[in-house]
Image 1 (cartoon, rainbow, N blue to C red):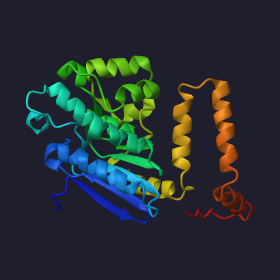
Image 2: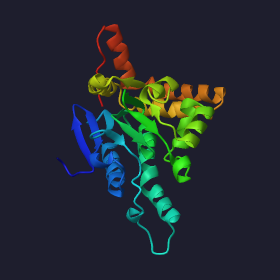
Image 3: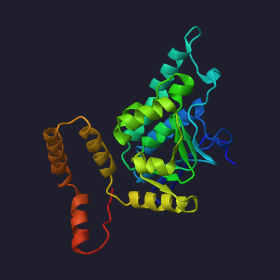
Image 4: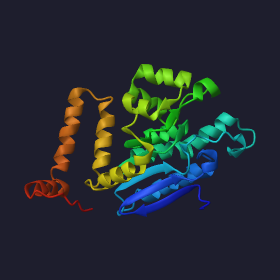
Length: 266
């Protein structure tokens, strides 16, 4: 078995990053988050990758930040809060931003326990598919006296509404994959026996899309959260002006006319 804390593989234009600390349900060590960030930065400039799958080895997707205060580096005399703040600014937050700015679609394949920062990482992806037996839990507030982070306070109210986001954060109750799908927190919950085939099929379909379109759609949807209707209509107009002149649109039109699947180049 590989000793790498995050496995990195590219096959058929699909990159797969796999958390590889199964004994701890893939809790995040400093090495894990540093490696994940480096892989995401490497992938962002690869022209041979069209989709990314983020998943975990073993029974867990990611159990969140490893509660080992000794692994938080810093200058002697600095408080834990100051040291952790530096880590968030240097590694954790840039990971979420890298997923947000990823040039190709991202898919979280939640294969088991997904807790704390693991929930934030999953929800930072464009599409989330979960094992039917998987679950999501955020116990920052009721167990640790902390607020959810890595973008969770930004994402959850937008996905499930204020009431559910507030109650989930304060009560720390476990959310089943099926419940998460019903709430709109994730896209689908799949029977465990069909999970991997569903992930593979979805990743392949995502990889066939026009290069760059995932980032376009992602940013347009995010802008809509704060734009007025008039502002959003203008954003759509401006982006369509650019995209209608792209070779991808011309290929899509030609494929439709010829009754074939489009073949998008780089």
